[in-house]
Length: 390
View 1 (cartoon, rainbow, N blue to C red):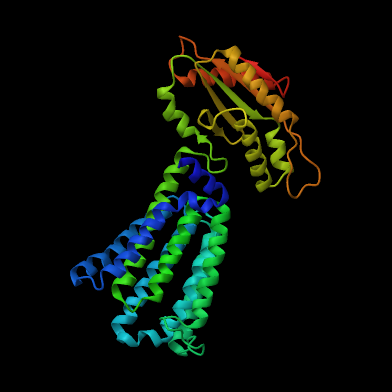
View 2: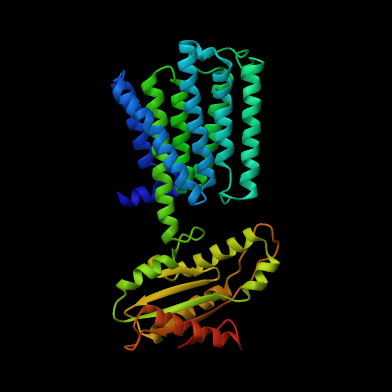
């Protein structure tokens, strides 16, 4: 069963992260069909939870610089607030109000834009530009809806609470997000897809209070789980290669066996490479180097310790045994040809490495690591593409 799921994940990466968000979405839809109308008290509780949990998540996303999900979430909360205000002011006639008609068109476009937004730092000029653009859009939205009373009602209405144009835009946006999420196979893109679907479902059946509230609540919970898992994962894994990070090494070092050897891999001439290649090309090279290492070593024993450094742990192995394995890694990388999409010629790279075995006098794994690092630095003063022992 596990092998079948793994194979499905290789064919369609989206399935690797779809169980939890699809379960949440299923519960919200099931609740809509089973419970025709929620009690006023329950609805009020659910209604306020959307704002409370939403504000809580906004704070978390701002602190951890998750701008993509942050703007995605703000669009959802503001839309939910606007729909409920329109219902309160206009009653059932809100469906034909220009504010609502424009919202049904602007919201999927906004979510689609924020889906492709890179994760800039919260306090950055890029996010400032996005925020300014968002405010300009709100101004245009308000001018069309209130000042000119112009909505998209010149397009014939569908049987649902959507105009045909809004429905078409929503479907196209969903197809684009589905394609990108399937291709990515990462946590956040996959969860954002389900949040998008939940919000669109809420808009389609917005005239039913329980459907609107449960759908938007499900979208916010989906974002909460996605970013919680992503933040936890990023704390203990390298976001580029997926390898365990320095934090994982610190945590796992408490459980290392009595006998082990540690190896440090350093990319030769890394400072010069950063001057020659672009940032995304450097990332591609690091990913390719990590894949070369993983062809010879198991993933749970390899750590991305620094920008240009990997640490390999060999449990219950002597320094000589680890040295031979490290030599295999060094030769494999030296013999490999790394191909970048924008470069016509393949690139040759080398690594230098250091090996050290835990001694009785070593108090912690960091004593072994420091000794290995010093031996590697001493060797690099005179030569590269070589494995040294400490």
